Length: 222
Image 1: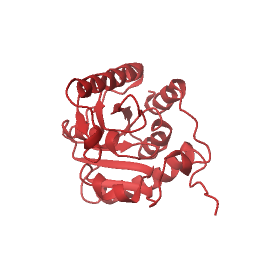
Image 2 (image 1 turned 120 degrees about the vertical axis):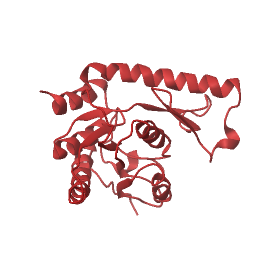
Image 3 (image 1 turned 90 degrees about the vertical axis):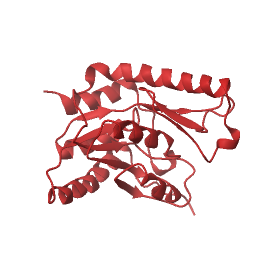
């Protein structure tokens, strides 16, 4: 049986995710005024996050986290680190993690990449403080959960009232784990068989820096 993608592209996925997030925010506002800020994991998360921020009429910012990997297998996340130095190590892959100097080198390389990417966005970021706000973390999909979890950890230190972890798609087995890091988890589809984020999109090109910056600019202008 042929696999049928769930979403045409990131834009469509973002529009659908925006509806789900808006509904959740409206329910919260019945109890207390909501003060949301959307945080995208760049670059792929920005075209998904932009419709979410637009629907909430709120700022769109980024939080940069990079996978820590082994040189021989750059697709396997053995940890993750944010640009400002929050770190997470994978328990599942602990037995193949580098130790000592090897781990420190891999971690340092990943953090440098995160810092360099964050610098690319510096001029387009809004001046916002998540303290007391609802921080809505958005990516185009969650495969291992490492970068999303470490991003949530970094944001938690800035004392938002709540953290939402949001994505169009994530593996079924990961959803409960994500609840350890977010106060709300909004996933549109959670298939048992996952393989990769890209297979759930009909079109899944790499998001170039120009497009990513444009997403920030459109939402934060003025």
